[in-house]
Image 1: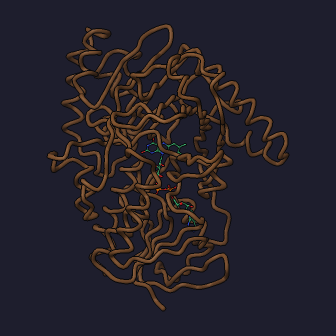
Image 2 (image 1 turned 90 degrees about the vertical axis):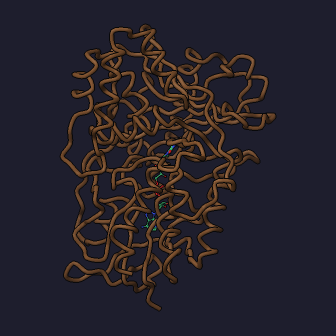
Image 3 (image 1 turned 60 degrees about the vertical axis):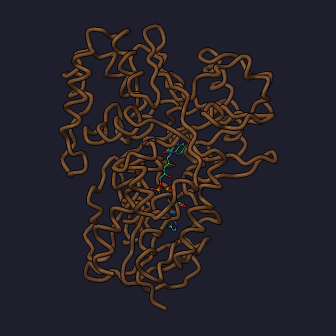
Length: 460
Ligand SMILES: Cc1cc2nc3c(=O)[nH]c(=O)nc-3n(C[C@H](O)[C@H](O)[C@H](O)COP(=O)(O)OP(=O)(O)OC[C@H]3O[C@@H](n4cnc5c(N)ncnc54)[C@H](O)[C@@H]3O)c2cc1C
């Protein structure tokens, strides 16, 4: 049987792309290598509890009436009803650069403006100029890399404020070391500061289940445990894919959402050289509700930097504890209080070091425990002591991300080189998702939809 469209990868971008296409064409097939969909944004069970792999917060919050907002546009493109989701908004989040300054922001952009007025009074007019400048940009037009750090420092005239504003945007969406592309900065600035963050009331599983059910209602098909090992092509045209099992599936078009270099590997028998990538560790602490008494009840996410200069790059050591992100998934408006809640922490990590030690299973496991303890000490200095209330903890390294999503070097934000138009030189194979340059859950879903609209639907 020949399928009109194969979507490779069942993460957020693949699911969104498959729904969009299935609305208009029968015979869309989504191929996922794992036994569960969701990609980096999936879930797992431990200690009789469902844990989310990736979710801190979904960016791009929009109220129901904001018709042009990316979130509402996405729902319309996928024919999803907003009332079928319950979106809980963040309380407020903080950027704290220890020994110097702290800034709060929420889904009301005025909070950030007021904070800047109070703490960086000389920057309030330049900050308005920055907003006006970003409004004039069309960040979706492909352009060469422009340093956001340089341009924002020039506009604001204050290095500390520039670094503080960059910190959350880098942690939630930069594949570049110590900088961001200006277009990416503009997209993330709007997604995080101007629009804000939210999460589903229950878990990512319900969110994914709803999307998958919706896709199947349009007649879409899914094959899990289907690892694509080869894309069959001749003269810049693809004919199908080969699965790990040896099965060949023929098709008219392919949308790949697994990454640019990861897709190139499926097209060639030769070694594919890749640029160095950023890795992260993520530690989840499940703690008893009593710990609430010692922890901030009013903060959703804390982005911190403890060193003189904020460094967003591959550390020389296994993990860089000098900066990171602390998320309290229970601190969103409308989340039910439970007997236990989670604290999640992210730091930059060195993939090569973790890769080398992972050859020795015991040494790798021991190092994860050490890393979790170091993260705990770091967190306690920032949010308070909760160690006596921990009931379960789990650390993922870049090796975990690589194992479960096949991302090269376990790099959550993929390649530093992005293919903005999704065109990788084939007439019927296109790229969407993280390596198209739209990061995070909403970004990657919008990417899937836009590539289907731009390249696939016109040919179906
Ligand atoms: C720890 C962590 C925290 C995060 N926090 C947030 C957050 O708070 N908010 C937010 O918006 N985003 C967050 N993200 C990022 C978010 O999860 C990603 O941006 C999003 O999942 C990217 O979606 P994607 O579909 O482009 O790629 P992926 O999610 O990587 O999906 C790709 C899919 O392709 C499959 N695949 C790979 N190779 C093959 C193959 N050969 N054959 C078949 N299938 C294949 C993979 O198994 C995977 O399911 C986080 C991620 C992590 C890991």
